[in-house]
Image 1 (tube, rainbow over the protein chains, first blue to last red):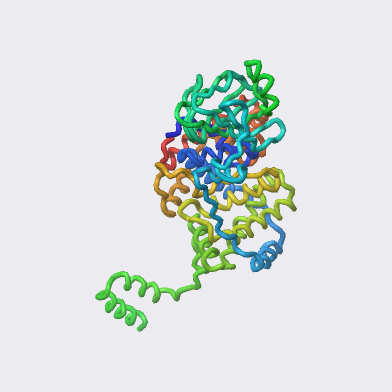
Image 2: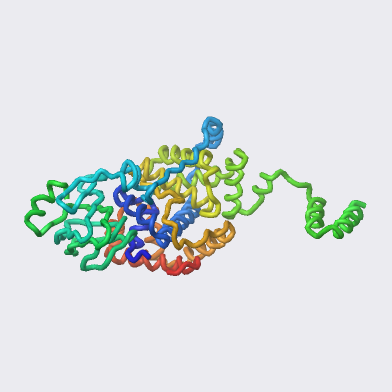
Length: 212
Length: 223
């Protein structure tokens, strides 16, 4: 059961096509897990179609239909694409990983933490993070927003407990120190819109080296 | 004379089953028009557009395509212009959206969405690609964790839900309706929408949340 969801404003931005690639990816991956938010996005898309229905139409050029009809015969139908994942990786993620989660070429950051960079656009970064059971990510605050979606395992911090599919949205006001749950590795998809502010001296120095 | 023949034919049909009677009476009442003409006479309801789209998928029906084009292309052009496209670009993209419909009609699943909703997502994705120039990470329609998903509605239930949604949208308080419309028609983050309306971001978000709660209730989903 998913306990932590994106809010309606974020889902609406996604449904209306206003999210950038980084936010779009974390929402698409959350939807893979969450029937409730899939229903919300489906409803928002219906709202979009109602607004489209009510819009004052803008006439096309006189020959627009004939131009389209003339092109129809030259267009082959799009083949039915069936991408599949062998380990339950959300399909939206696969093109960014070059395969499934189990194929990811992790980069080590110390004995129990690893990461994989997915995307960097301006000050926004998307990456996978993997922590061994019990790993503590040092206390930090945020200069921007941090979105963390659990893909495997789980973690907990002052705000609660997060399991696969749960999305944590942290803003500049949150100071936290997430700890990976016992049992299995915790794998998260994380979007940050600005670098993090670590409190521990070593992480303060190492963070920027790894692009955090 | 014709009436009598019809009546006696109907009488013989009755002994064989009432469904036959009905179709025989109908056949006598009007010669069967070509199917596309029937569709053209139907009211402009969502189901009609769905039927036309099914004909494009099943028969590559150009006449059905022409009706869909006449209805949707000028709306898609208007929608893209609202989002900042120039008239020429919006026209090209509206063409592109309709050709996409022709290419992908066989992938359309009437149990999941109406033709109108599907066209909206096609137009929205063109907006993302061509105007925002972003990549859209695709949620594959069938890619999700197989868990407690509600069984899919049939197309009729879907159309009824859309009818209720249409009614509920018209009844939204103006300040909520405005935030919904700006969410779709202004290519701006909610923070900027808030600035322009001269209200705090929290108010924009709460209006959106209230509106969504009403609409979820209207279509019978738990708020």
